[in-house]
Length: 387
Image 1 (tube, helix red, strand yellow):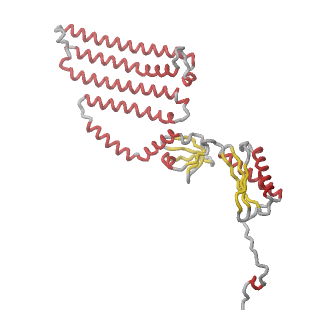
Image 2 (image 1 turned 135 degrees about the vertical axis):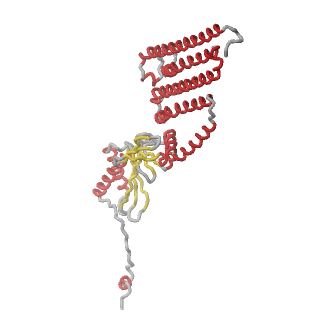
Image 3 (image 1 turned 120 degrees about the vertical axis):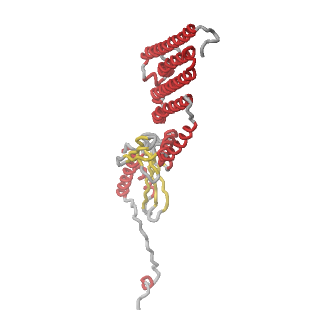
């Protein structure tokens, strides 16, 4: 408002208003110069330490105990606020200068509204820049050293959603400052959001399911998984909408995340990629069981020594039960992974079959033994004679 309580000299009032504007210009340009000077000084100070290596490891590059990660974050924030901050100071000074000018006494409300709206717009721009700077800093320093790829999936979405949200909030504040009621607009947006949510329910379901999969670390890229009643293969990628796996037929299968999260799944790569191999077989009741035990373990050791997919662990052997035609047993080995288990199983079965054939140990077909009563007369054994 005019400086009538302080002085009645209009020239002095204009001089003070102009001085405020000039001072705001000086402060704004000084802020811009200082922030740019500090950022250039930072780049010069850390260039000798390496951009990527020290940024990830957090090496102290200044001798003050402050890691380069901290310097890089400060540099990103200062660079993001340099221009918006200078513009904010300039608009603030211009608004105050116009309010102090005696020539703008009748326009005080308009000046306050327009100046406040401009400050809100510049403030939203600055907040958005700060968030984007922090997100970029995180992706270049922290995300590279994390074990999960959740942040790699979430950051691109956050880069789009959060700035738009900041601008939307700023726009609503500006509309309210301009005297436009935003209550009906908010009610309409709520109804529209509900309608959109219902229309996009499958997409949103897949989105939240994908977020849940990434956050829990159920599986990662490269794991071999199998869904109950579904496909099995290596995980190629986990997106926010679907999961892509490569089957053993070398085909890509795209599965919605909601299906993956609601299905019973076996992860053959967790917690250890090694797979147990259990081969069952049976030998005739006339076989020497001790000899069968010895031969089976010998063949298992040969398989472990000759097959690169087998783990160098001691095999196990055990008889399981008296079957209908054979005495059943099992041989237990370990393979390096899921694919290796098929190779080891194939090799062990071939070796066992060849060795049993060489040793004369019989693996019976399913048979039935019919026993007749030798004391009964022949006619009784053959059944009643026809008349």
